[in-house]
Length: 282
Ligand code: AMP
View 1: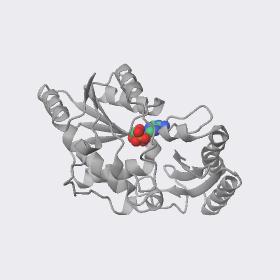
View 2: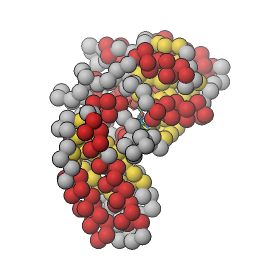
View 3: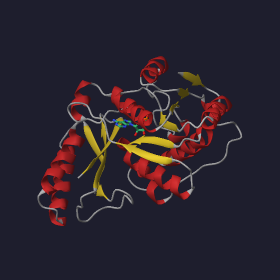
View 4: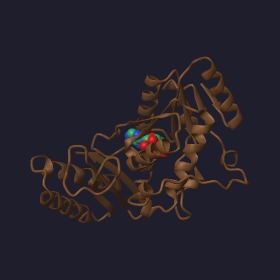
């Protein structure tokens, strides 16, 4: 496995691979790898001849009062895990390499970025789409694999790739969960024991809604199930609900009536500081 922290080095290696007829799969990450990240690398391995993982804690997607400085990092452990997962190149630039002092361009996807996490984290998705654009231009992958864990992000990246005609196939990968249902996340490392227990409340709320509307897909049942699920989260002392909605899987518009592919989206703050997000298909 090769590690490369410079743009021109990563670009010339990928150019060489393309010249040899290899298809390239990219997995963009912020590191601190868990089984969710490794599943994405595995998927890229199946799709492409060469797998590139970017490891970059992107300052542009963190707000001024967010956790950029304390975001968990484990570069050596990540490199070992990536090598064991059969990754060919880890692109791990410093912030100065990605954003020169003269950098001034931003990429944003308007409607899809507005609601849900976009509301609570202004500028977050613009930071994501800007860095993903840069990664697409540096690596020029045939496939880019993203987790459904960040469902709004995946929808935004799909929209951006279509709108801007990026010659890349965006691949979504299902959420990898802990045995008790909590979606794996690098930020779960922030949770203390009682918080870790409380954090399952969001997934449990999703499951209760899915169960309630499984047999009776009508608007009144949906509203009642959403209200009960929100009350269940409100009753958990360590959890504070940000949003919980049923949406169309592509437009992310709120659904009045549940449909087969509708998606439950939610975010909860645990212990006042750790924000967890999750989603579930009906
Ligand atoms: P991050 O390092 O948190 O920016 O995540 C990098 C990629 O891994 C994103 O596409 C995430 O959606 C994906 N990812 C994170 N956690 C999971 C998970 N539990 N299951 C599947 N994909 C995940």
